[in-house]
Image 1 (cartoon, rainbow, N blue to C red):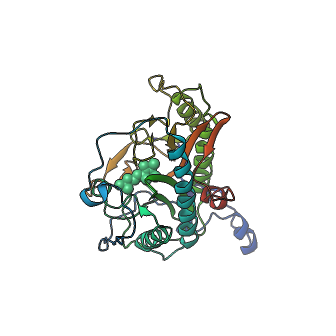
Image 2 (image 1 turned 180 degrees about the horizontal axis):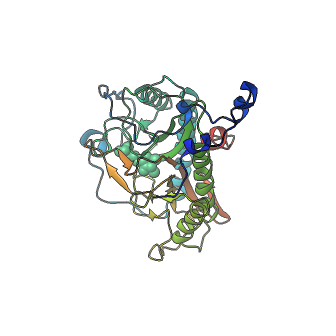
Image 3 (image 1 turned 135 degrees about the vertical axis):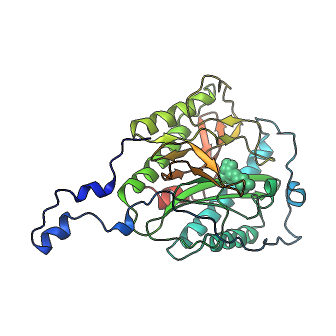
Amino acid sequence: MTKRKRRGDRVTGSPRSSPATSQLTLPRPAAVTPRTGAVKPGLVSLRRTVPDTIAKPPYAATGQPPTTRGPNVQTADVIARMRVAGTLAAEVLLEVGAAVAAGVTTDELDAITHDATLARDCYPSPLNYRGFPKSVCTSVNEVICHGIPDSRPLAVGDIVNVDVTVFHDGVHGDTNCTFLVGDVDPESRRLVLETRTAMYRGIEAVKPGGHVYDIGRAIEEHAMAHDLGVVREFIGHGIGEQFHGGLQILHYFDTRADTVLEVGMTFTIEPMITLGSPDLRIWDDDWTAVTRDGSRCAQFEHTLVVTERGVEILTVTADGRCAADQYAAG
Ligand code: MF3
Ligand code: CO
Ligand code: CO
């Protein structure tokens, strides 16, 4: 638990002079302060369909991904295809981000993701992955990850992570961004901004000859410096022809994560950072991970390839844009 002050404490000592003065000094209305632990499951709509013209990953029919995890270092051909898939994933995430607004349900975000993905000749990778029922993960406020899109309308003051993965030409591109819904309280804005920075610190730590633990160290140091928590149960992953490959990318420092980074390795960096304790529990739907203390969580994700010069971000548009830079750069 943190020793964070409750925002309401600020009321104490506010001068009660003229209305003009109190407008400047009173705290923000209660509607924009974070109310912890308030997200409830909603209704999940019927399964969306994918036309036969779209090439599907093997698990689309069975729900079971293959047990083989694929290589850590990819061929030039796989990397070239991942560059395309990454670009398409970035485009989809930008399109969904443009639709985030108060009153929009997370199911509507799922429909937009689904349609934008099919329109790019891609399969929405989450759909039926280990039985996941929807085409995107939408994680609101204290939801850490793997939120199932449902009938809950977004409200002013919410933060919502949208995690898009597309499968195109035999490979996956995986990227996410936490979006602000209207006027969001300063603590939550700080959380989102510093989580984005933590992801980029992790990305900057990637270089051939370095170690996987350099990534976690950079992320954890940034989180600690800002009195934020790092979720340990969910990690970045190898990616390529498999959605989740063999590489494990911890977002905290652990000397056991001593795999040497090599040119051609492809993986995600996707830290989940909390305002309070990073301890979690899973809802009865067996997917939705939430903080135990109800404190808010933010996340950002890119898919990367290790290069001779350091690292290339694959989940950006052809002209180098991404949702994290366009919507969450402060
Ligand atoms: N996109 C998530 C990740 O970053 C995985 C979602 S798996 C799902 O690894 F089944 F929930 F979609
Ligand atoms: Co991922
Ligand atoms: Co993802």
